[in-house]
Image (cartoon, one colour):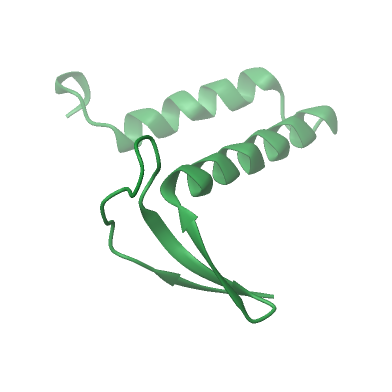
Length: 82
């Protein structure tokens, strides 16, 4: 089981490397997780979940796309939807 603690963003240590997003402790070993790793992990999890829901017939791909549009409108304000 992992234990997480959030860190404030800091400077990347190498070109192209992301700053530490959080520290994770697994089996007593501490590991830094970068923002890039966290983003990729989140993206992969969402893709897997969406594919599984579509494959099982819980939702359709069109329903997913429509909900993405709805959520985008709710969360990202533009002059058109203020």
